[in-house]
Length: 145
Ligand code: F42
Image 1 (cartoon, rainbow, N blue to C red):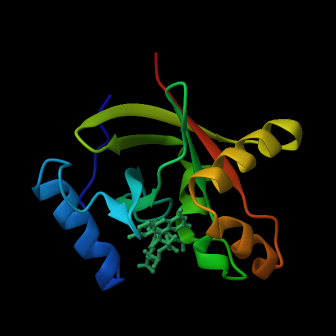
Image 2: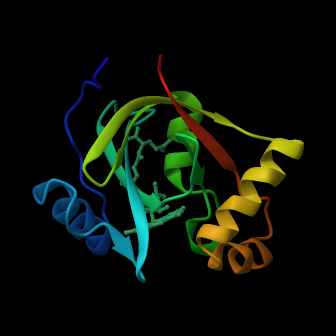
């Protein structure tokens, strides 16, 4: 089921630019940050109902993806965290492929396993966790059957 809504680009220019290049190239350009792969998450804004597009580091395992709400180690969760809690259906794009997916926050041992995968994919997450003074939330996104 595709998501409905008007696309509202991010207020951050660098994020907007990455989304624009990722999509306009059909997933062949703008797909990395610091040389590491990035996925694109489309979701619905909890209050506005608008479509939001958020690039995140690619943390994949057996067709599922972790979405790490690190917000660069900031003390607050990113706004998209709250949007996904309220409205967990997303479209996840990984380069040229995309899927309708549903996300859930993982906790306990499941979070630990995914956290280790996340740090293996993008080591800076470990520094962000030290800096953040909050437990960084981790969602797992899985295809909707
Ligand atoms: N961020 C991460 O948290 N983790 C990553 O792994 C990550 C990787 C990454 C790779 C490439 C790249 O270009 C960016 C990357 N980012 C990563 C940054 C990420 O894409 C986001 O920019 C960042 O996490 C901040 O997310 P944010 O949702 O807080 O974005 C802010 C700047 C934003 O867009 N704010 C909007 C605004 O207008 O202020 C959000 C508006 C919004 O969602 N409104 C809601 C609505 O209903 O529409 C309502 C909000 C409310 O008030 O409840």
